[in-house]
Each structure stands twice: as C-alpha cells, then as structure tokens.
Image 1: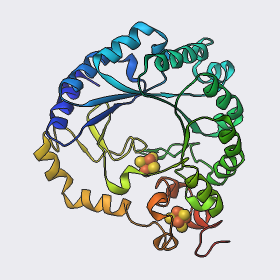
Image 2 (image 1 turned 45 degrees about the vertical axis):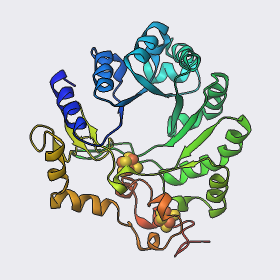
Image 3 (image 1 turned 90 degrees about the vertical axis):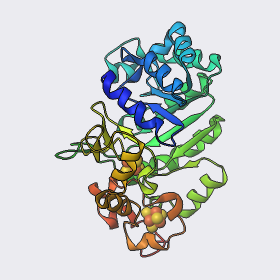
Image 4 (image 1 turned 180 degrees about the vertical axis):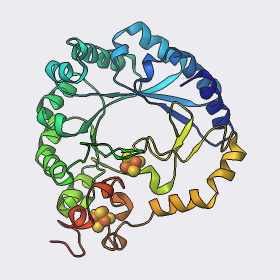
Length: 314
Ligand code: SF4
Ligand code: SF4
C-alpha cells in the first residue's frame, strides 16, 4: 500500500466512528513504513492491532519499537506445529524457531496477544504438535479458526474448497485434546453448525469455547486492499465494493456510498437466511448459515443435511 492510499484511508477513518484498526497482510510488519503507519493511526485516535506471522518480533528491539509506536494488540498466525511444517510452508529452516522466540517475546512484553491457527488440510495433519507448541509457548489465548474459501475475480480460488464435513469431524475429535491442554481457547466456527450434533454445539457454548460470526451479516467493518479498494471481506479479495478516492473520500461520502441501493441490497442479501431450514433454526444468530462462501462450493443439502433440525437427521 502506498503512503498516499494509506493517508487517504486515515482521513476517511477519522470521519467515521471507528475506534480500532487491524493491520493485516500479506505480512504487515515487513512493509517499509509499518512503524510510521502505526504512529499515524495512533495519532488519529485509533487503537491499533496487528495480525502477523510474528517472525519479525523475534527481534525484541523491533517488538519494542512496535509497541512504542502504538500497537496495543498482536495476533500471531501460526502455520504449523514444528520446524518441518514451517520449512515446507515458508522454505525457511529457522522460521519455526523464530516464531517460538517471538511468541515468548510478545508474551513477556505484556502486550495483549493471541495465537491463531486455521484448521485446513495441512494443519490437521500436525494438530497435536500445534497444541503442544502453543502450550509450551505460554500463549495466553489460542484461537482455532476454520478454513474458508476465497473468491477471486474469475471465481473460487482453485483447490480451495474446504470440506466442511471433514473439518467438523476433525474438530469433534480434537476438542477433548484442546480441553485437556488447559489452553484458553476459542473455536471460530465458520462452517454451518448443522455439521455438528446439537449436543456438541451446546457443549462448546457451555464451555465458552465457541466463537462465530461473519461480518457481512451485519455489514460491520471496513477492509481495504493495498490499492484502496473496499472489500466486504478479505476472502472476496478481487471483488471490491468500491474504491477510495473514486466512490468516496470522507465520512460523509462513505455514508452516501453505503446507502446506495446496490450496496444496501448486497448487505441485505448477505444477512438473509441462505436456506429455509435456517429461518427458524435456534442457532441462526450465532451460526448465520456459516461462511457464505461455502455456499458457492457446496449445495444446501450438502451443507445443511446432516444435523439440521428441519429436514435433516436428528
Ligand atoms: S440450519 Fe442454518 S442456521 Fe441452523 S445450524 Fe444449520 S446452517 Fe446454521
Ligand atoms: S463471508 Fe463472512 S465468514 Fe466468510 S470469509 Fe467473509 S467475512 Fe468471513
């Protein structure tokens, strides 16, 4: 992202009731103006958090500069639970060790911190190692996310059709190990809840381990790509809603843009039940039918059939 685009975004945000900005990537910490960007946002009155692979925070000095610049929360996204996973994913033999050092540095700094992992084909294979790694890293919070499809301009990203049933079966089999680990964890479920028996959803809710929610349902949050294009969600990365500087530049312009019939229509459709079975489902508020992008990969009966209370098996 260029400095110009970044400053235009800050001007826009200053005219909107937005209190928190999350810097995501790619990898935000390797941007040459990362620290300056944090300072600018902080000066504009924002709370600044960063989602990072955290490799750069292996350097305590860089971590210190980041905190001094104004970052008040870090989320470390981990890609595996051992050196060989990281070698395969990053090509770097030292990446795993660096991330482990970084986590320990961040925890020691006292900065609010969460370690996150996405359940997908590759992480499922070494999840026992991932749990052990997070446990030994002394991370205070652990977020388990579930893989979601990505929609590019030409259609769904090839090879990225998460198997919801497989993810559900995996989460159910891994849940006892997560509980036994003693970690302070949440599972962000973005697959339709009716892939789980109702008793499992109840259990996660009672244990306070269930997180969910698609920002497109309530239309909250603004996401900008590096060119200043506004995205409804970062998995719709080549399908922007509009462009900063063309469609709007300040808070007032943004509200006018957001109230356009095509925009309100889009968000209305996103907040609508995707299937009749969802309409009276007791889980609708939390589940919302799961990530809407799963619906581009699979049909209603595949997504809702197994345990839905209307029309599926009990
Ligand atoms: S019926 Fe719809 S709202 Fe209910 S659990 Fe299934 S996907 Fe979620
Ligand atoms: S559609 Fe919703 S749940 Fe799916 S990736 Fe986008 S914001 Fe997340």
